[in-house]
Amino acid sequence: MGKELLIIHANCQGEPLAEFLGRIPAIAERYEIRLVINYVRQPLPEKLLGSCSLFLHHYLAPTWKELSTEHVLSKLPPSARSLCFPSMFLNAYWPFWKPKAAWEYPDHLLDGLLDKGLPSKEIKRIYCHTNVVPAHDLREIVEESLERERLKEQHTPIHHVDEVLARYRQEMLFNTVNHPGHAMLCWLGRRILEELGLPEPEESVEALMPELHPEYRQPVHPLVAEELGLSFAGWETKYPVYGRELTFEEYVVEYLLARANGIDEFITFLRARAEQCEK
Image 1 (tube, rainbow, N blue to C red):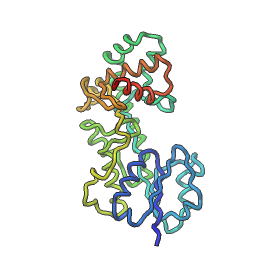
Image 2: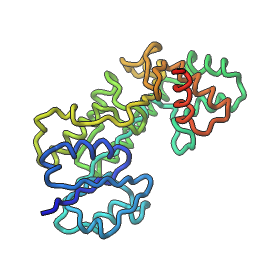
Image 3: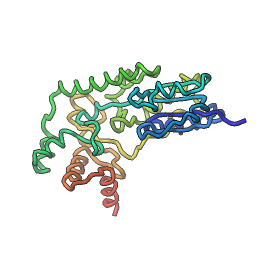
Image 4: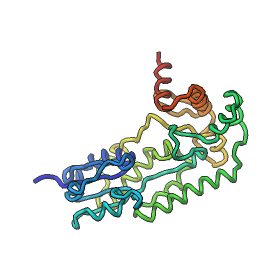
């Protein structure tokens, strides 16, 4: 007898989850796992949905049309089970991030200083060693980010905001705004197993859960860390950046260098720089 179909409809956070669930015997023995990436709008044909037994998904609003949660759930068989899990996001570590920019990992403060035509050395001095954003504004950015996450929790029984609030100052819970680190992925894996009525595996969740793009952890501004009480981020802290270990100031130099050279693909640039340093 063939296996039942488990569909995971999610962003990149679904990648480690699919691999993790495939390592859980109670799931692997029963289900064929199919990962469908939502942000690139991979299709979900009605025939595929019609054969689904378990549907794990992020919530997508009606504006997503045929990929929206409401539409997709209506195409599942009556016997199918569905579970919405959170698409986790946090910009507290990177309050100068701006959304919907073509440049990977954009920083609106750095970009604003660049737009003024200042020399790179002066930009670095201002950005790294002056109070570029008042403390009140930083806290407001964090609160707004967490409030948006609270709204997401309306769609899922898995509530992550309190977990983030309890831990985000003591350990770096995210690698980028939308790439949760290993600790949060393990927390999510445990909660999903709990919602599915499955016990934790004999082998630890930490051993079974892969990381999400661990080759890049975006450096945290030490002045932001100081203001928000982040104990793990300082001037000497080094972060993995596509093959190198960089401090925050070293990372800023790379950002400015890429902008000065009209680079459109920042990730490609950072990888190439790492290769140059190896030679």
